Amino acid sequence: METLSYILFFSIAGGVLSVLLAALILLFPSKMRSQILPALVSYAAGTLLGAAFLGMIPKALDGASPEHVSIAVLSGVVIFFLLEKLVIWRHCHKQDCDVHNASGPIIIIGDALHNFIDGVVIAGAFLISAETGLAVSIAVIAHEIPQEVGDFALLLDYGYSRSKALLLNVLSSLTTIAGALMAFLSLQVARSLIPYVLAISAASFIYIALADIMPGLQKKHSTKENLIQVMLIALGLATILAFHIKS
Image 1: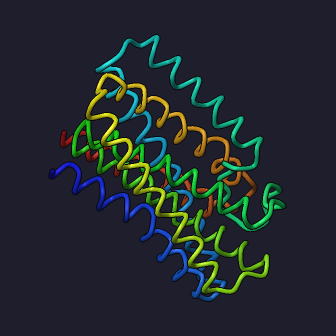
Image 2 (image 1 turned 60 degrees about the vertical axis):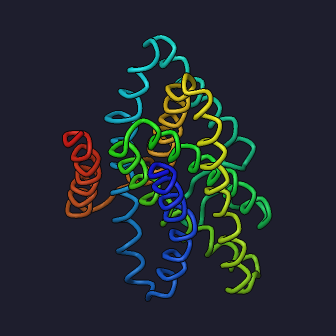
């Protein structure tokens, strides 16, 4: 039951708590937001890549052959690419992404799907070990906060009131708990599937970091901004590495 408690706690933190923190950040002055969000995004890139390459893929290799894990990771990347093409996965961290021409309901549906998958990822990680679960949860929370800021702001732009936008985001975040519970109950019975769940989950982290976050970080910045980005990415990697050195 301790494992389930961890899963539920961090599913709530990665879902509802991230939405509430995002709503709080939107209340900050625009100048402060323009400093906080890029820092969060850079840190998130490091945690996502660290969780995938330092934790999830190595743990998946403990339970399945390298060939099968590689196939699962590659399949996951293709799956998330296709979901992005359907405009229900794109993980933007700013308001002016091209895919945000989608309607408000599509944004909520896409966010709900993404949160559901986050719940599956968290549950699968905790079923491997507490250290893996904590590292993955940090990565989920780190990238969810700036994402929720973007979604929240977009709903306001579409004419939703602040209270309705907050309610819809909170409701969509509850799918994190649903995904975690479903994964926990299913993987308890079919533990042989855990390596493949981890591999596909790692693919989602890699895809978000490389296809959605890093292209934005590659835009021309000052030498100081570039250095800060690199340091925050390294900090994200170091955060994840610390858990796995301990384990």
